[in-house]
Image 1 (cartoon, helix red, strand yellow):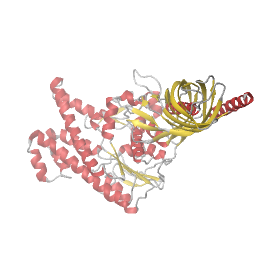
Image 2: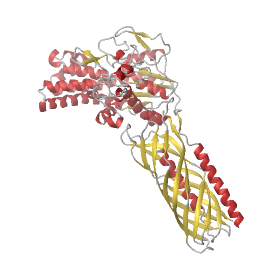
Image 3: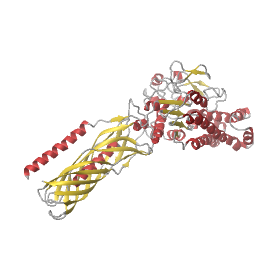
Image 4: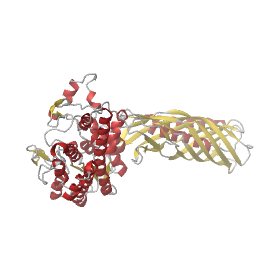
Length: 225
Length: 388
């Protein structure tokens, strides 16, 4: 479950980063940007496999982190965006039959996304909406379980239950807009949706299929080189 | 521009690469098992399923690493349990001097109302609590785990089923511990419905009695983290399944037998529900109490054993040692060891671990895995309260 969350977060981050790169520029321009992104997984959890309480589900909470990235203008209208983010740290909490137990663990996500973007308007326009799409690889790491997870799965402090999330590939769609403040400086805001699933695993053997499908909002300030 | 691009691209690649490496390096799964509440002592009051060895054995499969659920819960807080009392006879107890400072007061055979010993005998769970309360009080760092009522319900069922043989003498006697002669007389005069209805009235009064004990000796003594289990549906234990089967047989079997069986089970379940409902009314809203619905959880385990990883929910894992005065099988826990069970899988079962997925050790008590499931149930309640 945690893995799924992380993946979603990572994906969202990547999407955000990509968005931040949107600046009205011309072919051959390279824009480097920095900003922040919030990834909100839209979790649709499966049930934890047996042995478990029937209907044991998870939720993955939203996370915020710093993002940056680089956008290269292939033409005046087509750009390639590579967002680079600091890891997002998501809380994984109980849901379904274990709703209310609180935090089962945390998992970090690092979404790696490469977006192809189409930017509307002229290269010289101050305001340029854009759309984008591309693959996202959600990298989940450093899962850290809580006493609650151990407790409800029969673990002990000496033999605690741990969790992991499978790294997965997904697709990210993006809608955003960039505003050119000056010739070189710009600001951008983008919303991305990443379609991604993951499988969470417990050290006690159970697994859970989770759809993360995170929505991310990314804001960035960019500078054209 | 070109050198810039090259440098930016290189820097980006380096940054991305470093992030990936950082991620890879820290990919190991870890756990922070520090509970949200610091518990420094776990105090336990109850009956056989919470007994850490008052009689020199636990009421489950014997093995040094087979923890009962109260011990498993304590382990979540880094604590171990040992019996406060040591049995000096079948119904006599002294403070355990072999190990000092023990905090598990639960004793196998413990009842809310034990009719064959004095009220101050710690086989009365209220007396266990009073023993502690007389010597001290609780703090916010104490976790208290209390169960009771299962043996009382079993007593009531036994007395009820004995009505045709003893003219309701045992039933009257047990009911008389909590109900007035007028209540009993009116009920028994009311035919089958009135007679069975007394059981529910009794169980409600039993819950009131247990609540009064818990309030006076635990809640009023400063405890703020109290786990109370309600009565599990004992009609689904192998012992009471046999009792119900005998009711079916006595009614001629077939459809008539099945109807009688279902009626009896519903009656007994109604009694336990009366107790559990009253206990919830008294304790359910108390911030200091985590009331655990053992009744429903056990029913769920019986209804969907595979979901809980249980391979057998009907057959006790321990070998039958003999036949009791009630015609039901008896078991011998001291000789029912993990080693012995692993060495002797029953017919049709293979592997040394066969008993580790059974629900029952004898006809009335869970296996170590059954205990684990109950610990997980309690952990869910503890977590929901923010105590784990």
